[in-house]
Amino acid sequence: MNDTLPATLPRAVTPAQQQQIVNIVRRAARAEITTRFGILEPSEIFTKSRSDDLVTVADMAAEAMMTRALQIAFPHALVIGEEAAAKNPDLTAEIADAPLAFILDPIDGTWNFANGLAVFGMIVAVTQFGRPAFGLIYDPVLDDWAITDDESHARMDRPSGIETRLKAAMGKSIETLTGLVSINHFTPEMKPKVAETLPSFGRVHSLRCSAHEYRMIAQGRADFLLTANLHPWDHAAGALICERAGAHVEMLDGGPYDASRLEGHLLVAPDRPTWNRLKKIFGFLLA
Image (cartoon, rainbow, N blue to C red):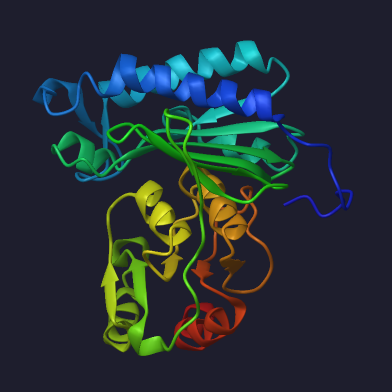
Protein backbone atom coordinates (compact mmCIF):
# COMPACT_ATOMS: atom_id res chain seq x y z
CA MET A 1 0.00 0.00 0.00
CA ASN A 2 1.35 3.41 -0.96
CA ASP A 3 1.30 5.71 2.09
CA THR A 4 2.74 8.79 0.33
CA LEU A 5 -0.17 9.63 -1.99
CA PRO A 6 -1.64 13.10 -2.36
CA ALA A 7 -4.99 13.69 -0.66
CA THR A 8 -6.70 14.06 -4.04
CA LEU A 9 -5.99 12.52 -7.42
CA PRO A 10 -7.23 13.51 -10.89
CA ARG A 11 -10.34 11.72 -12.08
CA ALA A 12 -9.32 8.25 -13.22
CA VAL A 13 -11.79 7.84 -16.10
CA THR A 14 -14.21 10.37 -17.56
CA PRO A 15 -17.93 9.60 -18.06
CA ALA A 16 -17.25 9.04 -21.77
CA GLN A 17 -14.45 6.62 -20.95
CA GLN A 18 -16.71 4.84 -18.48
CA GLN A 19 -19.22 4.22 -21.25
CA GLN A 20 -16.38 2.93 -23.41
CA ILE A 21 -15.49 0.44 -20.66
CA VAL A 22 -19.12 -0.68 -20.44
CA ASN A 23 -19.17 -1.23 -24.20
CA ILE A 24 -15.98 -3.31 -24.04
CA VAL A 25 -17.41 -5.53 -21.33
CA ARG A 26 -20.76 -6.03 -23.07
CA ARG A 27 -19.04 -6.92 -26.36
CA ALA A 28 -16.85 -9.49 -24.62
CA ALA A 29 -19.90 -10.97 -22.89
CA ARG A 30 -21.78 -11.39 -26.16
CA ALA A 31 -18.79 -12.73 -28.06
CA GLU A 32 -17.26 -15.10 -25.52
CA ILE A 33 -19.55 -15.77 -22.55
CA THR A 34 -23.30 -15.86 -23.19
CA THR A 35 -22.83 -17.95 -26.35
CA ARG A 36 -21.09 -20.61 -24.25
CA PHE A 37 -23.32 -20.57 -21.18
CA GLY A 38 -24.95 -23.93 -20.57
CA ILE A 39 -23.20 -25.70 -23.44
CA LEU A 40 -19.60 -26.00 -22.26
CA GLU A 41 -17.92 -29.30 -22.97
CA PRO A 42 -15.95 -30.98 -20.14
CA SER A 43 -12.81 -30.38 -22.20
CA GLU A 44 -13.48 -26.61 -21.96
CA ILE A 45 -13.43 -26.55 -18.13
CA PHE A 46 -10.18 -26.67 -16.18
CA THR A 47 -9.15 -26.64 -12.51
CA LYS A 48 -6.68 -24.22 -10.89
CA SER A 49 -5.74 -24.24 -7.19
CA ARG A 50 -8.47 -26.71 -6.10
CA SER A 51 -10.92 -29.12 -7.67
CA ASP A 52 -13.72 -26.54 -7.29
CA ASP A 53 -11.56 -23.57 -8.44
CA LEU A 54 -12.48 -23.55 -12.10
CA VAL A 55 -11.54 -21.67 -15.23
CA THR A 56 -13.16 -22.12 -18.62
CA VAL A 57 -12.37 -21.25 -22.20
CA ALA A 58 -14.94 -18.46 -21.82
CA ASP A 59 -12.98 -16.87 -18.93
CA MET A 60 -9.75 -16.93 -20.90
CA ALA A 61 -11.22 -15.69 -24.17
CA ALA A 62 -13.21 -12.86 -22.52
CA GLU A 63 -10.21 -11.71 -20.49
CA ALA A 64 -8.00 -11.69 -23.58
CA MET A 65 -10.58 -9.67 -25.54
CA MET A 66 -11.09 -7.12 -22.76
CA THR A 67 -7.37 -6.82 -22.09
CA ARG A 68 -6.62 -6.05 -25.73
CA ALA A 69 -9.39 -3.46 -25.97
CA LEU A 70 -8.39 -1.70 -22.74
CA GLN A 71 -4.70 -1.65 -23.65
CA ILE A 72 -5.61 0.08 -26.92
CA ALA A 73 -7.98 2.55 -25.24
CA PHE A 74 -5.69 3.22 -22.26
CA PRO A 75 -2.15 2.53 -23.50
CA HIS A 76 -0.44 3.86 -20.37
CA ALA A 77 -2.53 1.85 -17.92
CA LEU A 78 -1.66 -1.38 -16.15
CA VAL A 79 -4.21 -4.08 -17.07
CA ILE A 80 -4.41 -7.17 -14.86
CA GLY A 81 -6.88 -9.98 -15.35
CA GLU A 82 -7.56 -12.76 -12.88
CA GLU A 83 -6.34 -15.45 -15.24
CA ALA A 84 -3.16 -13.55 -16.10
CA ALA A 85 -2.49 -13.12 -12.38
CA ALA A 86 -3.08 -16.83 -11.80
CA LYS A 87 -0.22 -17.53 -14.21
CA ASN A 88 1.96 -14.68 -12.86
CA PRO A 89 1.05 -13.77 -9.26
CA ASP A 90 3.72 -11.05 -9.23
CA LEU A 91 1.41 -8.88 -11.35
CA THR A 92 -0.66 -7.95 -8.30
CA ALA A 93 2.41 -6.35 -6.68
CA GLU A 94 2.28 -3.66 -9.40
CA ILE A 95 -1.13 -2.34 -8.31
CA ALA A 96 0.18 -0.24 -5.41
CA ASP A 97 2.48 1.87 -7.62
CA ALA A 98 0.30 2.09 -10.73
CA PRO A 99 -1.15 5.60 -11.40
CA LEU A 100 -3.90 3.90 -13.40
CA ALA A 101 -4.70 0.18 -13.23
CA PHE A 102 -7.54 -1.89 -14.65
CA ILE A 103 -8.33 -5.03 -12.67
CA LEU A 104 -10.53 -7.56 -14.45
CA ASP A 105 -12.54 -10.61 -13.49
CA PRO A 106 -13.84 -11.93 -16.83
CA ILE A 107 -16.27 -14.33 -15.12
CA ASP A 108 -16.78 -14.00 -11.40
CA GLY A 109 -18.61 -17.08 -10.20
CA THR A 110 -16.98 -19.43 -12.68
CA TRP A 111 -18.13 -22.53 -10.75
CA ASN A 112 -21.73 -21.36 -11.15
CA PHE A 113 -21.18 -20.52 -14.82
CA ALA A 114 -19.56 -23.88 -15.55
CA ASN A 115 -22.41 -25.70 -13.82
CA GLY A 116 -25.20 -23.89 -15.63
CA LEU A 117 -26.22 -21.55 -12.81
CA ALA A 118 -27.02 -18.01 -13.94
CA VAL A 119 -25.30 -16.40 -10.93
CA PHE A 120 -22.13 -14.99 -12.41
CA GLY A 121 -20.89 -11.60 -13.47
CA MET A 122 -18.08 -9.60 -15.02
CA ILE A 123 -16.09 -7.15 -12.92
CA VAL A 124 -13.88 -4.22 -13.89
CA ALA A 125 -12.21 -1.96 -11.35
CA VAL A 126 -9.99 1.03 -11.99
CA THR A 127 -7.53 1.95 -9.27
CA GLN A 128 -5.08 4.80 -8.69
CA PHE A 129 -2.12 3.67 -6.59
CA GLY A 130 -4.36 0.93 -5.19
CA ARG A 131 -7.32 3.17 -4.39
CA PRO A 132 -10.53 2.11 -6.16
CA ALA A 133 -11.62 4.96 -8.44
CA PHE A 134 -14.16 3.26 -10.73
CA GLY A 135 -16.21 0.09 -10.41
CA LEU A 136 -18.38 -1.88 -12.83
CA ILE A 137 -20.21 -5.13 -12.11
CA TYR A 138 -22.01 -6.45 -15.19
CA ASP A 139 -24.59 -9.26 -15.34
CA PRO A 140 -24.37 -10.86 -18.80
CA VAL A 141 -27.68 -12.68 -18.32
CA LEU A 142 -29.75 -9.63 -17.35
CA ASP A 143 -27.61 -7.22 -19.41
CA ASP A 144 -27.48 -4.62 -16.64
CA TRP A 145 -24.65 -3.18 -14.62
CA ALA A 146 -23.87 -1.57 -11.27
CA ILE A 147 -21.49 1.31 -11.83
CA THR A 148 -19.86 4.19 -9.98
CA ASP A 149 -16.72 6.24 -9.59
CA ASP A 150 -15.22 7.95 -6.58
CA GLU A 151 -17.11 11.17 -7.33
CA SER A 152 -20.58 9.76 -8.05
CA HIS A 153 -23.42 7.91 -6.36
CA ALA A 154 -23.67 4.24 -7.34
CA ARG A 155 -26.40 3.35 -9.79
CA MET A 156 -27.78 0.42 -11.81
CA ASP A 157 -27.89 1.01 -15.57
CA ARG A 158 -29.81 -0.80 -18.30
CA PRO A 159 -29.47 -0.68 -22.11
CA SER A 160 -32.83 1.13 -22.32
CA GLY A 161 -31.18 4.11 -20.64
CA ILE A 162 -33.05 3.62 -17.35
CA GLU A 163 -30.81 4.41 -14.37
CA THR A 164 -31.66 3.43 -10.79
CA ARG A 165 -29.87 4.96 -7.84
CA LEU A 166 -28.45 2.25 -5.57
CA LYS A 167 -29.03 2.49 -1.84
CA ALA A 168 -27.61 0.18 0.80
CA ALA A 169 -29.90 -1.11 3.55
CA MET A 170 -30.58 0.73 6.78
CA GLY A 171 -28.82 -0.39 9.94
CA LYS A 172 -30.76 -2.80 12.13
CA SER A 173 -30.39 -5.20 15.01
CA ILE A 174 -27.89 -8.05 14.70
CA GLU A 175 -30.50 -10.81 14.89
CA THR A 176 -32.33 -9.45 11.83
CA LEU A 177 -29.30 -8.97 9.57
CA THR A 178 -28.84 -10.87 6.32
CA GLY A 179 -25.19 -11.64 5.73
CA LEU A 180 -22.98 -12.91 2.93
CA VAL A 181 -20.16 -15.03 4.33
CA SER A 182 -18.21 -17.80 2.59
CA ILE A 183 -16.80 -20.16 5.21
CA ASN A 184 -14.35 -21.57 2.67
CA HIS A 185 -12.48 -18.27 2.52
CA PHE A 186 -11.23 -18.70 6.09
CA THR A 187 -8.34 -20.75 7.42
CA PRO A 188 -9.15 -24.26 8.69
CA GLU A 189 -8.70 -23.19 12.31
CA MET A 190 -11.03 -20.21 11.86
CA LYS A 191 -13.83 -21.96 9.97
CA PRO A 192 -15.50 -23.43 13.09
CA LYS A 193 -15.26 -20.12 14.93
CA VAL A 194 -16.86 -18.23 12.03
CA ALA A 195 -19.56 -20.91 11.77
CA GLU A 196 -20.40 -20.45 15.47
CA THR A 197 -21.32 -16.80 14.81
CA LEU A 198 -23.79 -17.46 12.02
CA PRO A 199 -26.85 -18.33 14.15
CA SER A 200 -26.56 -14.81 15.60
CA PHE A 201 -27.99 -13.39 12.36
CA GLY A 202 -31.33 -13.58 10.63
CA ARG A 203 -29.92 -15.32 7.58
CA VAL A 204 -26.48 -15.98 6.06
CA HIS A 205 -25.80 -16.89 2.43
CA SER A 206 -22.91 -17.52 0.08
CA LEU A 207 -23.56 -17.13 -3.64
CA ARG A 208 -20.09 -18.28 -4.77
CA CYS A 209 -20.04 -15.02 -6.70
CA SER A 210 -18.65 -11.74 -5.36
CA ALA A 211 -20.23 -9.84 -8.26
CA HIS A 212 -23.78 -10.64 -7.19
CA GLU A 213 -23.01 -10.45 -3.49
CA TYR A 214 -21.82 -6.87 -3.88
CA ARG A 215 -24.79 -6.04 -6.09
CA MET A 216 -27.11 -7.35 -3.38
CA ILE A 217 -25.44 -5.18 -0.73
CA ALA A 218 -25.57 -2.09 -2.96
CA GLN A 219 -29.26 -2.71 -3.72
CA GLY A 220 -30.13 -3.08 -0.04
CA ARG A 221 -31.13 -6.73 -0.47
CA ALA A 222 -28.46 -8.00 1.92
CA ASP A 223 -26.98 -6.23 4.92
CA PHE A 224 -23.37 -7.22 5.37
CA LEU A 225 -20.46 -9.05 3.79
CA LEU A 226 -17.36 -10.53 5.41
CA THR A 227 -14.48 -12.04 3.51
CA ALA A 228 -10.95 -13.23 4.11
CA ASN A 229 -10.23 -13.54 0.41
CA LEU A 230 -8.81 -10.24 -0.82
CA HIS A 231 -8.21 -11.00 -4.48
CA PRO A 232 -8.49 -7.49 -5.97
CA TRP A 233 -10.51 -8.64 -9.00
CA ASP A 234 -13.20 -9.86 -6.59
CA HIS A 235 -13.46 -6.80 -4.35
CA ALA A 236 -12.07 -3.54 -5.76
CA ALA A 237 -15.16 -2.67 -7.82
CA GLY A 238 -17.71 -3.97 -5.33
CA ALA A 239 -16.17 -2.21 -2.35
CA LEU A 240 -16.39 1.13 -4.15
CA ILE A 241 -19.92 0.52 -5.45
CA CYS A 242 -21.18 -0.37 -1.97
CA GLU A 243 -19.42 2.61 -0.40
CA ARG A 244 -20.94 4.97 -2.98
CA ALA A 245 -24.34 3.36 -2.30
CA GLY A 246 -24.04 4.43 1.34
CA ALA A 247 -22.61 1.30 2.98
CA HIS A 248 -19.72 1.40 5.43
CA VAL A 249 -16.70 -0.37 3.92
CA GLU A 250 -13.64 -0.92 6.08
CA MET A 251 -10.97 -3.48 6.81
CA LEU A 252 -11.72 -5.36 10.00
CA ASP A 253 -8.44 -4.15 11.51
CA GLY A 254 -9.25 -0.56 10.54
CA GLY A 255 -8.70 1.65 7.53
CA PRO A 256 -10.10 1.86 4.02
CA TYR A 257 -10.02 -1.00 1.56
CA ASP A 258 -7.07 -0.87 -0.84
CA ALA A 259 -6.73 -3.13 -3.88
CA SER A 260 -3.02 -3.60 -3.26
CA ARG A 261 -3.71 -5.24 0.09
CA LEU A 262 -3.89 -9.02 -0.27
CA GLU A 263 -4.24 -10.14 3.36
CA GLY A 264 -6.80 -9.34 6.04
CA HIS A 265 -10.58 -9.28 6.37
CA LEU A 266 -12.96 -6.92 4.61
CA LEU A 267 -16.23 -6.08 6.34
CA VAL A 268 -19.08 -4.24 4.60
CA ALA A 269 -22.12 -3.13 6.62
CA PRO A 270 -25.11 -0.79 6.16
CA ASP A 271 -23.64 1.92 8.42
CA ARG A 272 -20.85 2.58 10.90
CA PRO A 273 -22.83 1.64 14.06
CA THR A 274 -23.79 -1.74 12.55
CA TRP A 275 -20.21 -2.21 11.35
CA ASN A 276 -18.97 -1.62 14.90
CA ARG A 277 -21.39 -4.21 16.30
CA LEU A 278 -20.30 -6.73 13.68
CA LYS A 279 -16.65 -6.07 14.46
CA LYS A 280 -17.26 -7.08 18.07
CA ILE A 281 -18.67 -10.40 16.84
CA PHE A 282 -15.88 -11.08 14.37
CA GLY A 283 -13.06 -9.53 16.39
CA PHE A 284 -11.57 -12.96 17.13
CA LEU A 285 -10.30 -12.96 13.53
CA LEU A 286 -7.80 -10.27 14.51
CA ALA A 287 -6.21 -12.35 17.28
